[in-house]
Every structure is written in structure tokens, then in C-alpha cells.
Length: 104
Image 1 (cartoon, rainbow, N blue to C red):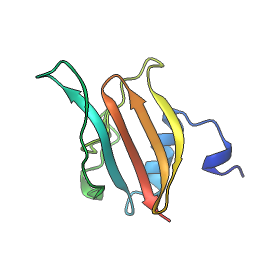
Image 2 (spheres, helix red, strand yellow; image 1 turned 90 degrees about the horizontal axis):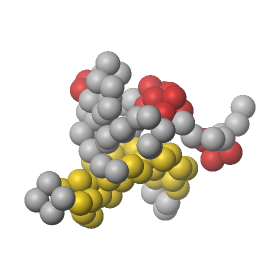
Image 3 (cartoon, rainbow, N blue to C red; image 1 turned 120 degrees about the vertical axis):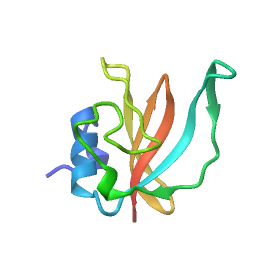
Image 4 (spheres, helix red, strand yellow; image 1 turned 45 degrees about the vertical axis):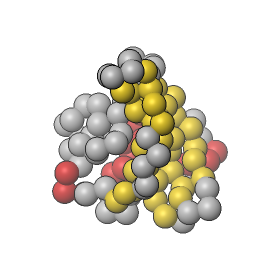
């Protein structure tokens, strides 16, 4: 089986990653859209644990996860993310950038 690092990451991959790691997920909001400036701004927020009870796959764009936003229609860019502490998926689109990950 291919690891996350070796495969093409899609929205389905993101959804599967969330389902498999629902109790161990962290979200890091790198940037988000700011209506006051009408552009995407860096947020500099610390990673926070995702409340598994609020994850809802019927919520189409966020899956119920605060700090994660997908826009659909092939306008999301998903890449593998790994740093000293986390392994996961980087989500980038017109609404900002966030990382959904688990601790190594």
C-alpha cells in the first residue's frame, strides 16, 4: 500500500485521512481570508487538537473542523506535509492555507 507521501492527494484522500485519524488530529491554520483587507492574511495560530465529536462529514466544505476549509471544483491544492512534529496534509486554496496532521 502506498504511503501518503507517495500518492497523489485528493479531497477523497483528505477525507480518508480524517476518518482514519479522527481521534488524533491537529489543525494548523497558516492563513485565512480576511474580509477587512479583502485578501488572505497569515494567522500565526498554534496547532490545536480537533474535537472528534464535532467532525461531521455531512458538512461539505469543512467537515466540521474549525480552521479547515475546502472550496471544491478543482480549486483546492493538497500536498503532503511533514515537519519535526507533524505528518499530514496541507490544504491550500483561495480561502487560505491549513494543515491537518497527526503527531509523528
